[in-house]
Image 1 (tube, one colour):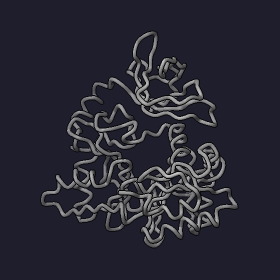
Image 2 (cartoon, rainbow, N blue to C red; image 1 turned 90 degrees about the horizontal axis):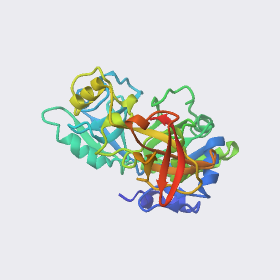
Image 3 (tube, one colour; image 1 turned 60 degrees about the vertical axis):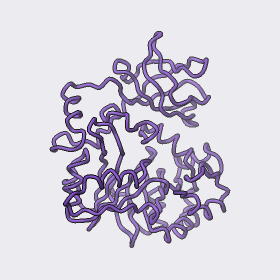
Length: 350
């Protein structure tokens, strides 16, 4: 799917630098857009993410038997993070589910909705469950930053500041979801394709007074790393055991069977995994490549999965896997970047 073809007109008007088939990388430059989000509010198109609609009277019990969280506890207008695993507890998708009156809206993130649908469809036998790939029919934008609730109120006339994380409100055919993607607070808006252009322009016209500007994926990426939020297909993939990647808010340890549950239970009982996803800060302003090795006294200590220079921290911030003995806050390691060895410290266990 080429999202940019559908959304190009209102990005090209603003001289966006577009990533092929994806969202804009930047409008002005990544550093300016980073500070826009930190100080006010940034508006971003994230329509490249996947979206599913799931209907049918058995939808809750069906998903509850497959996903890691307790879907049966999901109340209308609430949301929940959950994961789809294989039988070896490797992560196939990082999902956010939103309960609507007669359906579930599922944000499949960086996993394509068609791929997630294909996996789920295999398990539908006699259940009354219908799974629809809604990615082409819906556009997803996000407003992120300390003034994001003010922007929602001014442009859409909705009071959103009291919504707890992943809670939602509907506005006609659109859904407004409290979704912090940057550590600065924020909201996603998922709406029919025909609504997208007027809503986008509405934010730009009415949001200027509070400092709202469009932002691209590069600024979002820096803030994602600062916040320590893993991204599927970058920091986590089908080779990652879920407990290595954190995902504490996506697992219910008391519910019954789901795909991969035996492995999760065994690893939890043992009380450890061999490596852990961590947030690191690296003493450099230069780029650090994914898969750069972490070293400690000549021993391999892990590897970087994603990294970017932070204008606020004035150093590189990244995520990576640290071997068990190094996965502790405050642990000092070196990052092997080309011929250079850079000092780094583990600042958070994800």
